[in-house]
Structure formats: structure tokens, C-alpha cells
Length: 115
Image (cartoon, rainbow, N blue to C red; front, side, top):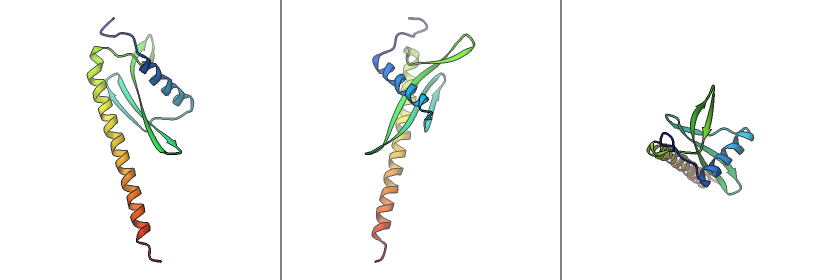
């Protein structure tokens, strides 16, 4: 363990795999939350059952002259990471509420159309 950093978990590998797939598909996150070097990216996936939101997390670091991302987080990263995830959760919740309100307005508008 160096500078409070230690190995990742299977969840990190899965999260990074999702991010890699999205990058390869040319998709961009619909929202990004940053706390220093930590990032939570919110992705929107349209499915047959409606929109699904996913979140990937990463920590940026410099390796020589290039920047890289890691899915491994140290002790000092945990609270800022939790805050980033909380902000991502709040964003998704707001999106879901707006979507529900829009559907409700559409349904009310349809009922009020005179025949």
C-alpha cells in the first residue's frame, strides 16, 4: 500500500469494463461529478423497458506525461468518492422525477382532449 492506495475489487473491474465499453461505443456520460482526481460518470442506456442509469467511478493519476484512470481507491479517496456517488444519485433521482412528471403531464393532456 502506497499513499493509502491498495488493490481494486471485482466491482472496480466491472465498473471499468462498463466504462471501456461506453468509450468504445463512442458514448459520453450525461453527467459527471468530480471531486479532485475522483470522478463519477452517469450514463444513460435506453432499453426496451425504459431508460436505465448506470454510474462508473474512477480516479485520475499521472503516469509520466500522460493521464490515466484507475478503479482502485485508497482510504483518503473513500469520503470524496461517497460524496461523488451521492451527487450522482441525486442527479439520477432528479432525472427520474422529471421523466415521471413529463409522463403524467402527457397522460393528463390526453384525457382532456375533447372528442
